[in-house]
Length: 114
Image (cartoon, rainbow, N blue to C red; front, side):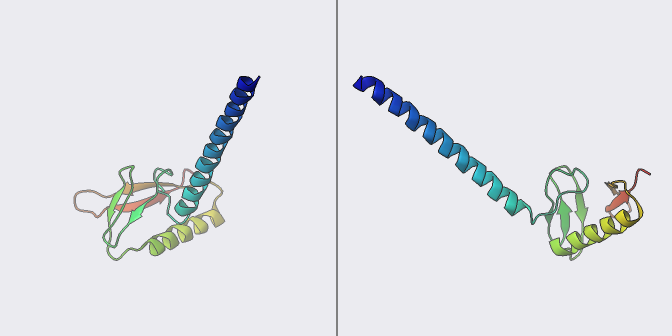
């Protein structure tokens, strides 16, 4: 009887530890999400966050634009203002692409499917 209780208790403890680990992982994921909420989501891939420096904007998806004096706050304001202005006139979601070529500087272009 003592062995059964001990085994039963051990199973309860293991289940409790797994539950604690799961709760901790969930909490860490939520905290990571809060940290990412201040980041700018890439408008091209809509998955990754942008990295902004005073000389460039880039994303893991391949987006790379050279800039002059760009800050995260400036870029956020530009994107928010452009999207807000578009939403006043249109219900469709715009798409973003990077344009430019050999002689042109790379830039972010917003187009609407309508």
